[in-house]
Image (cartoon, rainbow, N blue to C red):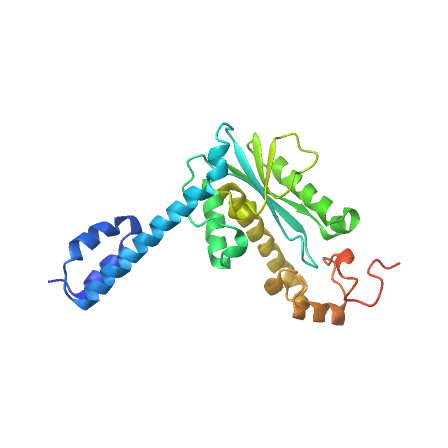
Length: 258
């Protein structure tokens, strides 16, 4: 008879989709350790089925607009920070996309976002990002800079989309048909993928900026106005990547140097 440790190793080494075979094989084993392994496997399969159902529901808009051959999700990250660029993501997923765990990037752990970023980049038909610098944000305001970053992301795609699913906004200056969806990053798999792609890109960039300006803690706060960030801003003044139009409440001198 196989030991519990040997059976445990089998369960650990088996892909989730193949667990039913082990459940059937060891389901009648009366040892408490084996019963626990079988119960855990059943729970894991149930969770997988729930995730597949969630992803199916997340494709609602993609099914609704299935007459379009190339649907692109659009989202942005970084409208609120005091420092760093705003970044837009554009992702075209295959119609038969089966990537699990895509969601609004804010609802995912950093580790999960990083893992999904690599899967999205590998499996997407096309993906791209666009940026608007802090200087550009100060020059034309954050909303217009966001639109600009979105247009840049769209133009960077290697495949031209024939429909855009956008998180909440209608992008001016774009001739492609658009569907704005409120909280779209949690309602559309394409927009969710774009939010992850943009979020990981921006987070990695802010981590690099942290090496240049370590006193502000950009690796941790990603440019958002944490208490530590604001304290550093008051102590050291703004860095070259701070948005001057965003920090007037935190520094004494005129942020525009006028």
